[in-house]
Image (cartoon, rainbow, N blue to C red; front, side, top):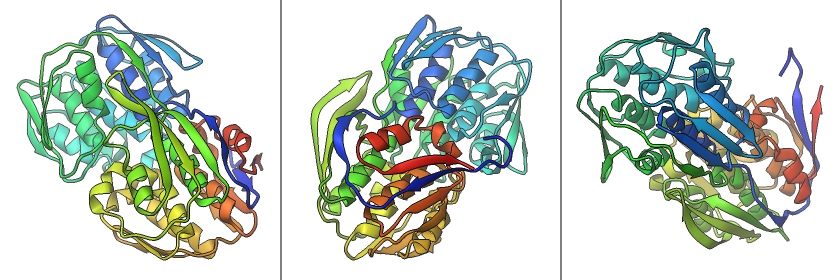
Length: 439
């Protein structure tokens, strides 16, 4: 996004979603395929890779550290691994754009290298909290400088890491993954205990590349000094990207869509569980396992939704999907209450505050709370809302137009490309009346 240009969406009211299609590859798995593939011995072949800005930032980072990476070409990437000790010092700052996953996971991986690295990001990333990773890494012996706990981060290499037994203060897959990656370079066995289950893509991929990880209930253990062996990774379609279409079909009468080859990892299907509790008509078929990750086709047909108290055990399993779930709640009959989701306040934007303000602008009774929101279902009106540079906010409000009384104008949508490069084209093809405009 150059200068002060405003990339906005204008979405006309009404319509329904129909068709069978596949959304882009899973962002979490795409990131990890590059990181672990780079440290592996041999060539890792990745298919279904997400060619969004976040995942491309991870590729650029490892290229800057001497890893040969071919592609991406139509979702195919070849990563020529350099082994656990083969990374080289980059000759300038590593710029990670908007990608919180990249900077947090790389913090752990780079803490164990012999060289210094400075990681920077865009204005959104530069405002996000990093002490959640830098504090436990410091306990392991890492030396990391930040700007009042936020990026840029300077990681000083050459420090001896020792294993820790760490209880995560919050349910965060990024922090868990960061510490697992650091644990590969630490002396001893690193143990991480989670307060609630979070996505386990890192553990699955480590095991798939031959690095032993012990999982006992809510504890994960990794021993330092192992090695990774290159493998083939087929990245499933991203359930977080599929969510916008799942919600759109769930709220718009006459809708019937099938999303193909979507990852249904049990640590990620909170959105399906919550929508089913609200009365959504969702069926899974063609279930299979690819590269250790379960996948399925997801069919969604419109059915009236009702408000619920969202079970707190589902919150970590749907943490990225709440902006869209708030739209479902706005279209449901009755009251929906979310608690236990304070993590939403430190995402790409404060997703609780931003979604509440946008829904209020559109005429919905939405009250933000410290750790969630109370939404009384109603009639969505027309209006102008702000995407705050947060891809999930922008796409959620776009789907709200299916049930709106008039057009919805969404400002500051440039970052949709970070996770879903062809969102507008795909949305148009299945029935959303959306235009992207640069002002």
